[in-house]
Length: 356
Image 1 (tube, rainbow, N blue to C red):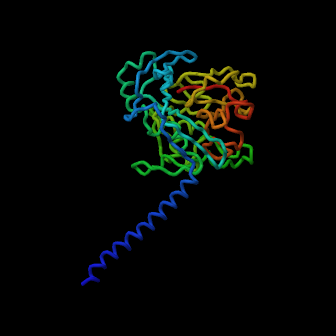
Image 2: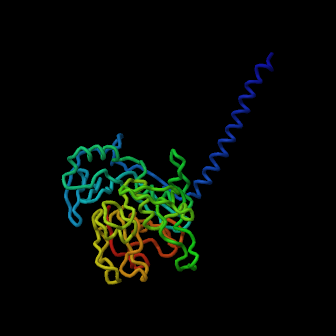
Image 3: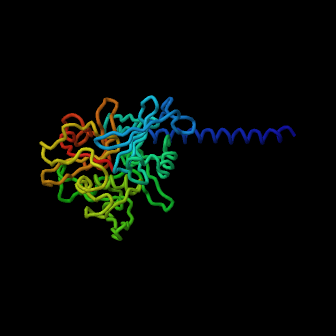
């Protein structure tokens, strides 16, 4: 009789041991995979900034600033809680600290408390009193839901694939574009003109009724403006245009975005020559689009666009963009360090900035 009582116990112990071993291997494999995946490396709370509900505690005050015209929400002690710019839908909220890295291509580490989100309406003076804003701010103040930055880093090299309910891969490691049959190393190596629908591999119908089919050879690819349209448009739902023609959405190209009427210019475009480089870039805020003149062959057209992220751990102003040198979105150094300050390749070719 005793042996019969012990057998179930022994069986249970054996099963638990096997499960423990399986769990250990799964955890270790996951750790190994995560170590190779560029992502948000750390999220930490900001002591004293938020209460347990995620909303800012204590008294708050609004103030109006100029250049550009904007409303700033502060704590009673003066800490900035959020910034809302007239004519723009993007808002910058202060929240839990994050560190973004891309160890494959750079040693730079972007450390930030900024969370950039798209509001349902364009900001205007006094909008803080309106119901739409109060509802939106209540939902997103202190929230850790994916913002513009989190979405942008879901396309860098090694980023894991994410699928929606219909099985469409809407995020994951993205290419810049297919190899150019007429290109050479360092000179038009990859083709441009890959948009978000090419990356997704699905036809897309724009608000004007235009339907564009994806090109198979451009699958999982997005050029610099295609990357912006993927993050701000397809993911964050900023209205999109099928081309650069007149409309009320985000144009197709970097030049169209820079010269179009959407958003608010924070560094106005004066021209594309070296003499037109902005004298100061202090006004640029995390989440702003930054525009560059890289190729003399494009004459008076701006030909590159990225998203300003803020400062890295060394104090440099860092942006993310999709580039052919690393074949996709990056904050890396290959083909030019991704800095707006100094006199490097991108710093010297910066021409304007816009807040959508």
